[in-house]
Image 1 (cartoon, rainbow, N blue to C red):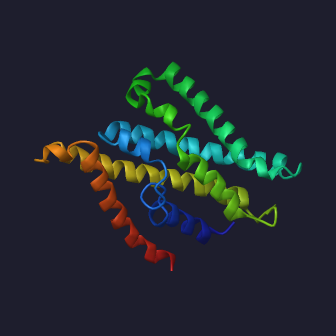
Image 2 (tube, rainbow, N blue to C red):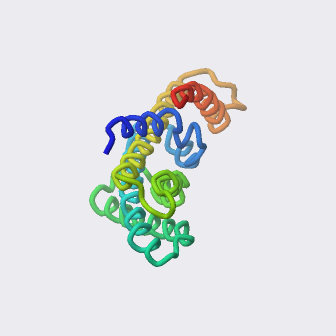
Image 3 (cartoon, helix red, strand yellow):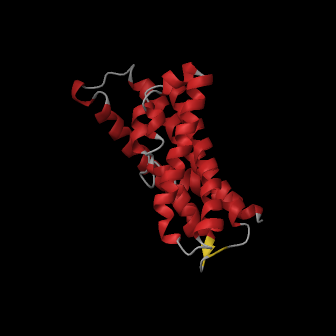
Length: 202
């Protein structure tokens, strides 16, 4: 395991290749939950947990089930089923043990199931850390860290957006731009700002 590679993965997934602001994945929960900081923080933490655990499960399934039986072409449908089942399990646990958190996340908790960022990171792991149908050295560790830091990048974008939108509630925004229109404008400006980090990849 190369510590320098892990640091590079962290910088890449949080800043350079941020799933929301660079790859534009997971925009539904991003725009829906970012009105206030508390739900945004809860959603970000849930996404980190789901991304990391889903990455571990899908890596194991791909490495020990799909590849040995030469059915790697089923990875997308398999990953979707694994993620959907896992998120449903998390939803049941949260509903049972933290009704306040369940109510604050509302409809956006099931949206993690269809959050393309979660599926995106599992497929990215396979594309990055497999070569010639075989896992590269320390592939499992790199995949886990990549998923974790992708979730951290998701959280960073949510926190930044929620802070800006809370300030906008106190600002004199034209009536025609209130709500989602101004949110799209802010997201676009944030995306342009994050493009500045692309210099780190060179």
